Image (cartoon, rainbow, N blue to C red; front, side, top):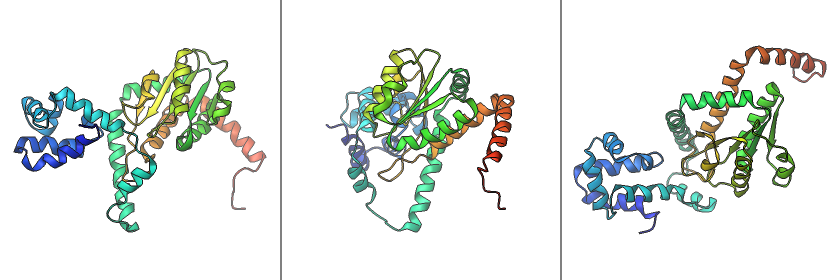
Length: 286
């Protein structure tokens, strides 16, 4: 049985399942991003069945037990689909633009709610403190993730004056030559993950830098290389990732940091306002 067959198998078997097993099947299919990481007891609680029923459900489907089923569910999430494959899977059905906007915005609302549940407030606060205390902050973000990286780097460097965005593969060695334990490296990566992001995060962690990873789930290849993590949901019915949740978390990081360092930030912004006025940076309507 291939790893990607698991959800299809659950769907195919639903008609022959008992009432309790159908409840489990429905829950797994509707929560396929989060359900694979639940214990048998938590899955039973969420699906409103007994724990023994969950274990029987796994064997009914042909697995050796719940851990075996759980492994297949998790490995199914790790499957790397090409952009063309995802596009093919997500364009079957309606192609009406007026329906697409409601669908995508609804998915983003779900992603935001899921992300709120996945990020611990204590972990988030610790990450903010790491950024405040860092000697240097390096943000590693390639390809589409560079959009979030650029946003973070712009505002963090604006107020802290110690942030650098690494988005070009050719210059990474020069950027990280002098990295130390006093530095923070924030790596951003979402499926499909770039090999270079994984390599850089592996390298800086080995060098002793304080590492933070923003990624989309616990099976991300970036996850092992983060001392702390920001798990953000990105799934929509498209070949692209949704960055609504990662961008919202980035905004939260900047806002929390500036509130914690409000006196320093206020002084910095006052100086910048004078500079911006001198060079006539912003449009004033005159």
